[in-house]
Length: 230
Image 1 (spheres, rainbow, N blue to C red):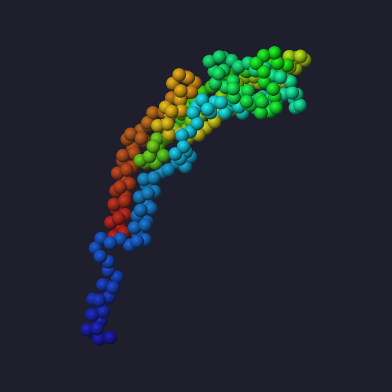
Image 2: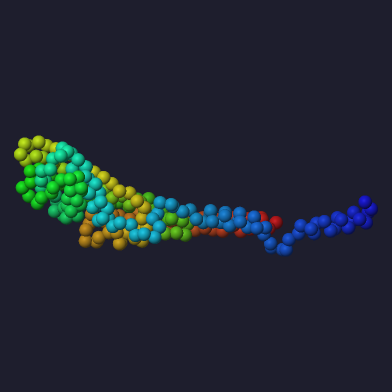
């Protein structure tokens, strides 16, 4: 190859792979977007999407129905005698009495108002709503909490004719889910204290650290953009 040909090749070859100033290769741009989304979107898959969760009252009643099924199973199979159900104290009885009745009936038991062959005296010992682990769905997303609804009922179930005790124990259950903080006023009943719980306050991370994470994420994104351009 002559000297003039070599010089021409040396000048022309670099221009074969040049790009317009500021252009970013497609594969680099995809990587850039992926990193930005990863930095800014720490999603929590447990949050219910769109649907309003059940009210705290409804959760109590669902738990009561399940506990009544367990109570009904304590009575010997095939026993079709009538059960009279008494629930105390009155402040909580109206919340769970209907659900307890439904649960007992679902096991094939007949529930009456009084003078039954079998007595079921139920006393609500625990009825609480707690909100735990306040956090955000994503860096710019809605704040959520874990809701824990706890119900415990002590039951004395006895045969009035023979005096046989079917059960003298506490039946308990809890339900846990994740709910948006903004939905809590619609899930509680202001006139029913046991449906209300204390919402965790925002901690250090929420009001102080998050802005720095946002700034850092933007800074990293800018650096990546300039890096893939070079």
